Amino acid sequence: MLADFRSALIHLNLRLSAFFLIISHLSMPASVLSYNMKQSDLTSDILIIGGGPAGLSAGAVAAELGAKVIILDDNPVVGGQLIKQTHKFFGSKSHYCGVRGIDIARILETKITHPNITMMCDASAIGYYEDNVIGVVQGEKFTKLHAPKIIFATGAAENMIAFPNNDLPGVYGAGAVQTLMNVHGIRPGRRALMVGSGNIGLIVSYQMIQAGIEVVALIEAMDRIGGYNVHAAKLQRLGVPILISHTVKYATGKDFVTGAVIVKVNKKWQPIKGTEKKLKVDMICLAVGLTPLSELLYQAGCKIVYVPDLGGNVAWHDKNMQTSIPGIYVAGDASGIEEASTAMLEGRIAGAAAYQSLKGVNLQAQEIIKLSKTELDQIRQGPFGTRPRLGKEKLSALKI
Amino acid sequence: MPKKISNRITEHPILTFSKGKLVKFYFEGKEIEGYEGEPIAAALIANGVKVFRVTEKMKRARGFFCAVGKCSSCLMTVNSIPNVMVCVEPLKQGMKVERQIGRGKLI
Ligand SMILES: Cc1cc2nc3c(=O)[nH]c(=O)nc-3n(C[C@H](O)[C@H](O)[C@H](O)COP(=O)(O)OP(=O)(O)OC[C@H]3O[C@@H](n4cnc5c(N)ncnc54)[C@H](O)[C@@H]3O)c2cc1C
Image 1 (cartoon, rainbow over the protein chains, first blue to last red):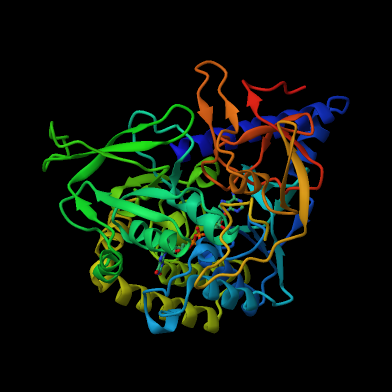
Image 2 (spheres, rainbow over the protein chains, first blue to last red):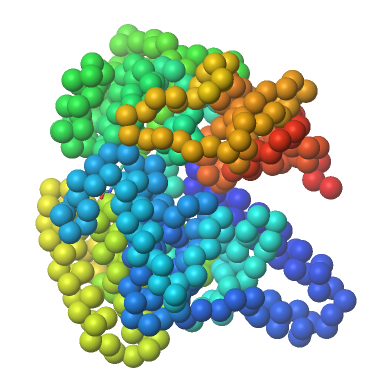
C-alpha cells in the first residue's frame, strides 16, 4: 500500500511539475519549450539517487577514481536506513559487522568528503525525463539535474497487510516507528503489538523496549520465527511472547487504535475460529517485508521483472549492476531486498562500472569490481543469502 | 525537559537527542510546545495528538503513517495552507496547526 501511495504521489508530482513547466512556457514557441525541458540546471558525470549504504559507496568509489559525482537524498542527513539502527550489525568483518548502524552511517559520511562529490540533502528525485534529466524538489525549489550515467540506489518501501481498521492512526510501518523513536526521540505509543518476526520485526521490537514502549506480543503467520535466533532470544529473555502461526484479525478503536484482535492460523494461513485473543494496545507495528523502490527506473523505461526472491518488481540488471538501458545502474535494496554489506558492495560495483563506461577501462576500477563480486558471492553462500542468490540467478538467466 | 510533554524519550541506553530551542505553537487554537526544527508531527505526537485529519468521504481519522513524506496520511492545515505534510515539515515558533477536514482547497 505504501508503495502504491508513493507511486501515486510521484505521478501526481510529475503531472504537477510538468503542468507548471508548461504554463511557465506558454508564451514561447514550441521548440523553446522542448529545449528548456531538456536543459538541466546542474550536470555531473554520475548522478546517484539515494544516500544509503549503496549510494554513498557508489559515490565514494566513482569520485576516488576521478568522476564528478552528485548524490541526492531526501533526508536531512545521509545514511538511509542506517540512521535509525541502534543495534550492532550482522554481516562480515570487512563491512563493519559488530558496529551499530548509526555509527556505520557516520563512517560512510567521512568517505564522501572527496572534492569530486556534491552531496544534496533534503532533495527528492521526483521524475525521470528524457536524455537522463532528473527532476528534483528541494523545499519549494524545483531543479533539473543531468548526468550521462545515473545510479539508482533508492532502497525500499515497506509492505502493508490488509485487515479491518488498518487505516486507523496507531497502525504504523516499522520504519515510521523507528524514525519517530530513534531519530526524533518520541514514543509513538505505550503498548505495542508487533507483526512479523523477520530481523526487522525482532530488532524494532527490541528498539521499542529500549525507548520505553511495552511490546505486548510479537506475532508471526508462519510456523517459525523468520529472523536470527539471537535477536528472538533477546526478546524472549525480556518476556515478550512470540506467537507463531498468528495474524491480526482486526484493529479496534474509533479515532485511533485502542486494541487488536489476533487469531491463530492453520498451515494455509487461514484463521482458526474460536482462537481469537483481544490485546489492549495503542499501536500496531507492521514489519511484513519490503519492496524495492523501482518507480523511477520504470519511468526511465528500464525492463522491470517480478522476482519474489528479490522482494517484488526490480529493474533487470547485469552483474555490473547496469539495467537494460546502458548508462542506468541500480544498487542496494532497490535491486533486491538484502542487507547493508551487500548494498555497499553493489554500490562499489555500480560506481566503478559507471566510471569505466564513461572514461574507459581502468585497472583500479576493474580490481574493485572483481573483489566486490567475490565478496558478494561469499555472502550469498551464507544461510540468509539463499533468496537473494536465487533471485539474482533468475535475473542472469533472463534474456533481455 | 518539561514534564507535560510525556511522549518524549528522556532516557535511552544508546541514543541522545539534540533538539532545537523549545518553542510555542498552536494546535486547533490551543498553545502547546515543541522543539524548533523537529517535524510538526513529532511535536504533535509528543503532545499526545493522534488524529491529524479526517477524510473527505468516509470521514475516517488519519494520522502519522510513513514518517518520510511519501504517503500523504498526515496532511494538515498549517498557517492556513492546506495539505502540508507535517511528518517532514519543520516546526517553527508560533505556527498555527489545524486538523484538515476533507481535501483542503488547493488554490
Ligand atoms: C530494522 C532494520 C534492521 C537492519 N539490520 C541490518 C543488519 O543488522 N545488517 C545488515 O547488513 N543490514 C541490516 N538492515 C538492512 C539494511 O539497512 C539495508 O539493506 C540497507 O540500508 C540498504 O541500503 P540502500 O542504500 O540500498 O538503501 P537505504 O538504506 O534504504 O537508502 C536509500 C536512500 O535513498 C533515499 N531515496 C529513496 N528514493 C529517493 C528519491 N526519489 N529521491 C531522493 N532520495 C531517495 C531514501 O530516503 C534513503 O535515504 C536492516 C534494516 C532494517 C530496516
